[in-house]
Amino acid sequence: MAKRVSTPASHSQIKPALLGKFHTGLAAWYAAHGRHDLPWRTTADPYHIWLSEVMLQQTQVATVRERFYFPFLKKFPTVEALASAPRESVMKAWEGLGYYRRAGNLHDAAMQLSTQGGLPSAPPSIDELLALSGIGRNTASAILAFAYHQPIAILEANVKRIIARVFALKDPSDAELWEGAELLLNHAEPFNYNQAMMDIGSLICTPKNPKCAQCPASVICVGKKSPEIYPTPKAKKHVPTREVMILVREDARGRLFLEKRDEALLGGLYGFPQTPYVNKGSAAQQQLGTVTHTYSHFKLIGHVAMEYIASKPNSPDWHSRAEIAALPLSKLDHKVLALVENCHSAKKKSTKARAPHKAR
Image (cartoon, rainbow, N blue to C red; front, side):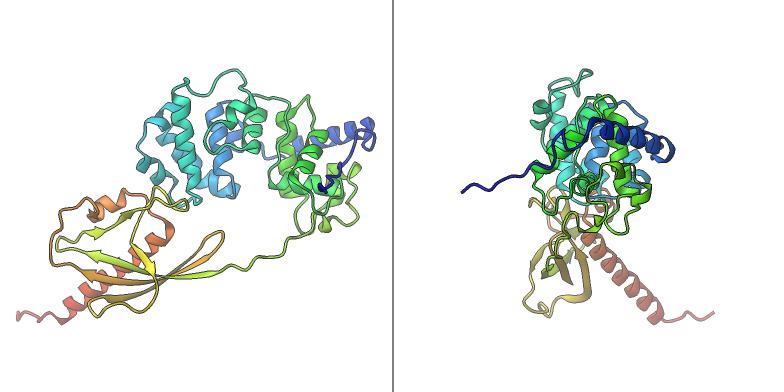
């Protein structure tokens, strides 16, 4: 038997007068308390808005605004500039932001758009946006609502929580959440409405200790008596730990061996070779220590070993320090590199200390 999908609400359950009161209250709250100074809210450029939406996926607003949004736009000011840039340059600009697949998809989509003359000045269809790499329904909806002021609802994480509470949904499906979002939408002011919904989700309708007395949605919220049970908190998943051996090889010219990642997690970056951790390595390898990094679905512990090569290999996989500085590396590989440099620094100090003092 097919699973029954419940309807979160109907127009008769939320009376037009109450919906209007909610819209009025939300607009007043946003005018007084909204984050109007966010740079992607003060531009009409669809590319800038699209970029912000991609950067903000699973990343805090402050991180994007203070460290990544403006430098990225300075380097790639247009869709065409992004499309024509080398992949390594794009990944380097994304370095430290994490979830690197986003950068690859952004670059791929820019190349798709470059053949079409970039993002159009007139509103595209949602299907046209969904055809671009890395753009799902919420990102497409946000682009249409914020760049083109189209009457369309968005459904990012904060808005999902508001919808679940307004309609008292403990375990809602995406279909139920989208239906609820569309029912509440202020069609006359989609830009301000959607921005306001994200803001009250971030500042008022928080996961813990929501400020219901200050919330403009309280006039229609069914779950306001027990807001923290909507939606039902998900049990924390056990995060497995992986141990790997990370081998740093340095040749006679002082170059380091790096491989280009091609897996989904870190595709487009460079890094030191990793193998499953079995033992402490060979006697020819110097043990430098361990590095750790927590990804979204596992924690990695890397045992770092150093190996010196007497030869000077003729391969593009060997890089000088200056070349490495221009390559995109993950946070984990930056930690490894820091271990290597600390080792070199310690060796220099030790050598200097052992050097005989010249007589005056």
